Amino acid sequence: MTPPLRTVCALVAYDGTDFYGFQSQADVPTVQDALEQALDRFCHREGRIVGAGRTDRGVHASGQVIRACVRWKHAMADLERAWNAHLPPTIAVRRVREAPEGFHPRFDAISRMYRYFVWWQLAPKGFPPLRRSPLTDRFALLETRPLDVAAMNRAASYFLGVHDFATFGQAPQEGEGTERCVTAAFWRVEAPEASLPAPDSGRRLVFTIVANAFLRQMVRTIVGTLLAVGRGELPPEAVKRMLGARDRSEAAPPAPPQGLILERVVYPSTLDRWVHADIESKLLRNEKIE
Image 1 (cartoon, rainbow, N blue to C red):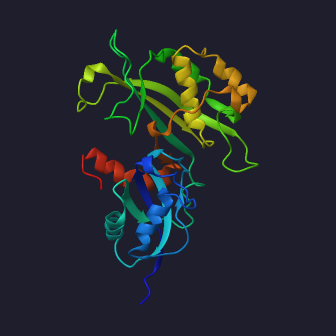
Image 2: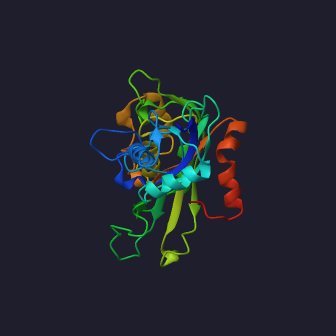
Image 3: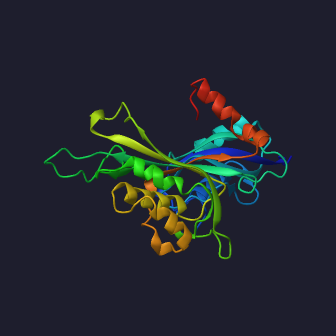
């Protein structure tokens, strides 16, 4: 007997270092292809997997939301276990459940939250700056120059609200608009991880940004510009001029991809609780999430 066709929703985390982004491309490894190939090893899939965000090459995710249509007669927990068993170690399906009728992970979303991580480590006086930070390089940008974090936050405040972000990114498809609404944009200085050696020798800077949607390379270009402000290369007020210019050449080069993580995709309240509730209750109980 043919198993029933079921539409499922999954929360997915991945280390994007070795992938050419989420979306499938010819002749290069992508997260979408890896997820589909894993499914195809143990069940019948119909159509392509759909993701909430098209993360770029080298960008990570802890809260990517995807939809897949599969023929499956067992419990969702069994599907989750089988899927993870066939995935590479750089991708994990955090939770699988049956999707409500008509659910679309991208079009139903009302906002996305990204975080960018910077490992800020100043060289002692008289010593050359570090060139590498082996314990953090895969998931953070190493910055060894002085930074004015207060100035970076002043500059970040200009991004709040509805603006045309043509200076800071490209529309996903030709002809699409470049106006976006940013509801949060700020830097926070965190204490270093206790597991890292010499924890007093560096700090972690985290940039959080939330918007209804993002242009290609928008977050990384914003981060690159804000770091230029922090180094004193630009005044904070330059951001306001850049937004008005709508000229890609006005912004600083994009920051490298390894510091960027798609952390959460937000949906209308009832749907959002449905997508995230099981994971968050596990976190509150400090349970291991596979």
